[in-house]
Image (tube, rainbow, N blue to C red):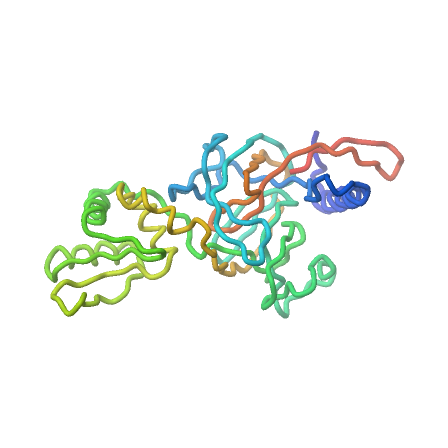
Length: 316
């Protein structure tokens, strides 16, 4: 089944589905799940963050693979291991969201942790935001087709990285495995002053890592370089791939607070109907193209048309 190519009609259809879901939900007994059954899908080439700190295209994922997810309840959310459960190809109306932290291509009803932009209200969208969701308030789940320019999506605060396969990266990985230590958020490298420490610092700086100034350890000649913030530590391990430290990397994120950054929505483009992938995970969440995202679900709904006829639609 397919949606109309008209984005306005697509929005109206989704609103009708939500109305039907609300009515059905009101009739449920307490022992039935009270979660949204709407469906959220992503472009096959969008990248998600895996538990071993790699960014992998959605089309390359397999059931059972472990991703980094987070609690679906946004207040006090923490990072959690998230297992890929189902993957399915669908064909739906598609939007491209351009933000200050990168671009993402998803279906119209894909959900994001979001905030309404302060001072940038759009009259026909105002009633779609819960109280307290303005720029300085709490994060809430919001659909792609309810976002407007100036709104904010929760961001990881770091663009997806590639695995660095250069000779210099291999040299750095060896140094890190031999000389570096991993705390709950930092990677620290200790060396005596000299050519080796100079080269370590230079190679990390040329790769854009945010490093602390050199510090002296216990009044000895040995000096220490540290990554600044957990995002830089994740990127260092994920791109350089030091074997020993990667085995310890789970302590960097499991049950840790994500400390959402704000990616401002700059533009939203309707791309027409495209092939997307419905991705469902055990936490119902994942991180895609550097943005925090809701799980994907898929189900067909029978919607009663205005003319009294009934037609089935796929939602994602």
